[in-house]
Image 1: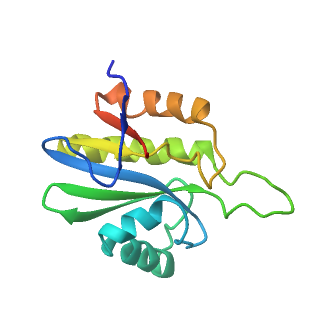
Image 2 (image 1 turned 90 degrees about the horizontal axis):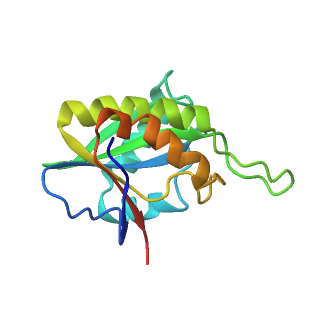
Length: 157
């Protein structure tokens, strides 16, 4: 089975050859404005615009769903709804939903195989979503790696 390749650097600027998919976690309330999405929006407007349209117009804007947005000839951004709402200060309940992340990564796995693409991401779900990498990493193994998808995880410096 493949293993995750850990790199230092910017997940919005993958350096590998061939088709690439940058993936990240979105919330289920249409919010886009904090965390990794800001780095995406700095490079391309389309992922945010498509996410907002999806939120406004779609019955399938729910946990576990994904949206593929082509931003360059060989590059896509995958918006994955794996977070329920956002952290509220009163309850401090992490908004990450691991089951939804797993559903998203299964869908992403199919897309990556269709496009013959590698997948690039920050440590998804571990920032504002409040998730733990010890929970996310095995999900990546059960979904993407099990299907022989090349996975790169970036730690921003």
